[in-house]
Structures are given as C-alpha cells and as structure tokens.
Image 1: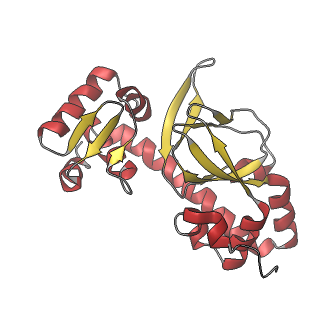
Image 2: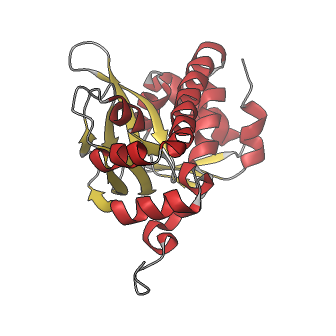
Amino acid sequence: MNQFAPSSAAVLGVLAERGWLAEQPDALRDWIARNGRWKTYDRGQTIYSFGDPADALYGLGEGAVEVTLPLVGEEEVTVYRAELGFWIGEAAVLARLPRIISLHAATPCRLFRVPGVALRSLLDRQPELWPGFCALSLQNSGTAVQLLAEALSLSSRARLSRVLLRLSARDVRVEASQHDLARLIGMNRSSLRRALGSLEECGAIEQKYGSIIVRDRQALEVFCNEP
C-alpha cells in the first residue's frame, strides 16, 4: 500500500466508526475505502428508483435519506428515514436484480458509493467475505419487519416517539417537517399534530419550523411501547 495514501478511517469518516461497516474486518473496510467514492446529493434528489438496474452499494455519511416504495401507480410511500452509518443496496447488487425500492435524499446528504461490478468481483475472489454481506441484508430485513410490527401494534404516539428517539441519537434537532413525519410514520396530519402536541405538552419535545427539538429522551421512552 502507498505509504502516503490516506487511511480507510480518514476516507470513510463516520462509516468506519458506526453501522454495518464498522463491524467488518479491517481488510473489507480498506477495500471499500479504496474502491468507493463520495457523492453528494441535494434535498429531494433521487439516488435510485424502483426498477433501476442495481449499480452500487451506498453508505450514508452525512445528512438523511428516505426509503420509499411504490404503492399505487406512481405514488410512493415513505417507509424509513435512515441515520448515519446506514448501508443499502447490497441485495439487488448481489442478486443481479432490479431495485425493489427507491432511495431519496431527505436532506442535503453525502453517500459513499461502491460500484456493484467491483463488489461482485471481490466476492468471486474472496467468497469468505459473503457472511458480512449476508449480515447486512439480514440487518436491513430485520428493520423492515420491525417497522411492520410497530405499524400493526403501536399507537401513533408510540411510533412517533420511536422515530424521534432514533433520529435524535446524535443531534437533538430532528430536521423534519410535519409533512415529512406524517409520511414517514404513515398517519394523517391531524393525528400527527395531536401526537406532537401531546409530546410537547409533557416537555418531551419542542416544535420548530421544519424541525423538532428533543428535550427529554426519557419522556419519549415512556411512550415507546404504548399500544
């Protein structure tokens, strides 16, 4: 290795410290650092769409992205807003199948893009690395199942509390409008306003224009399992 080349930690930043890649062997982190490139996206920009060819694996290093799924015609439903350290795109890349979800920039963001061709070539040469990518797919599948279970069994206030706790893990300010949160949690605006009002009344949050400030995480935790 070139002694003047930056370390994988320097290249990857938060992705070397948090999320799936941080748990992988040094050799895999080094390979991803060498073979991927950072790419920036504006708020609202599409990273990839349902039906697109699977071109790359993506890791979220700055900002926020939303996973959406087409429902009726061109209408899309937001199912998840990801936090830093999130990786996505491996399943379609490795199965050589079109995308089954869409990915959009919820805020200005920066993603580390690893070409799918290079990734498949790596696994052809080093099949012992497959378990790491299976773990990523299992992790993402587990998130999807958990979201479904929450939607079927928890109150609107509980689901909102869980989302706010997750999105405020690193910063008490959650950059999301009421419209964003309503789409993300899958509830109408009036139900969301009631849930937000209840949380603000007990001092758990403070509503700002285009954002929510989490003031008391313990108060949010009280409501997390409310049926």
